Image 1 (cartoon, rainbow, N blue to C red):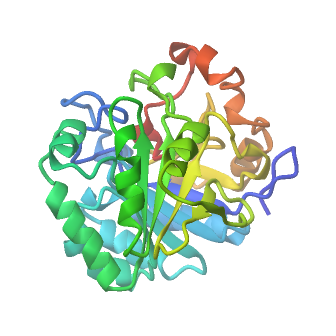
Image 2: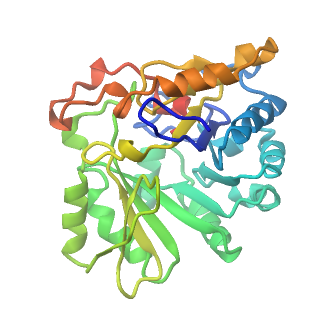
Length: 326
């Protein structure tokens, strides 16, 4: 098992396949022109599988593939197929644009749950947020996943004055569709111009929903990051990831491997451990993994300790979201 100094067992690994993306969402990757990591510095297919096997041998039960946009990587299908042979639950987070062409690989890899990042149900606003006119393609691909009985979760980052007025529309979507909407509090990362007045909190989200719907809490599973709810008569459900106002650090079991092979023991950690270089030098990386996780801070990387309204985002030492992998 991989544990930290607070006794938390870490059995969930998030692997970023690339920092490349076919969107340009301002809260994730603000610049249209972006210097992506050269291919030679990225983990190669066999290296990803080799690292994943080491983590699985140490008790990892779940692997999530992220990006950037993981499905823009040319060898994504080969990676998914290879990881699908490991004794883990394999899932993926994607912007949904390449689902149709990658569906055979997702099925072959045994992926039964797909998280789709979708911050608006309005085509014009989608274009504004992503700078890409692909809304209808994403919606069509969501329907394709549902048709193949693949569980769909929608990740919606709520931002005050931008899309908080669509919360009801997302809840309405769950009426006749077996999807889970995951409302996410806007979090600060390098370059995303986070300010507290853009943050729409857990309590504000719940108050907005309560105006039109009756909510019933759903008992949380171990290590849940989201607070889940159901609405009587709705085929789907919703959840809230309240990292900023009600974090879930006490039960965290997550580790993050960046596309260039760095291990982050927390989304907000100010440091990281290089695993790729030692791997390429045939060194034993297990002690590096154990040391990194053992040094994990009690909560929020030790950086977001102030109330969000007092937080100075510029003082946070971290990567941009796209280079972490979410």
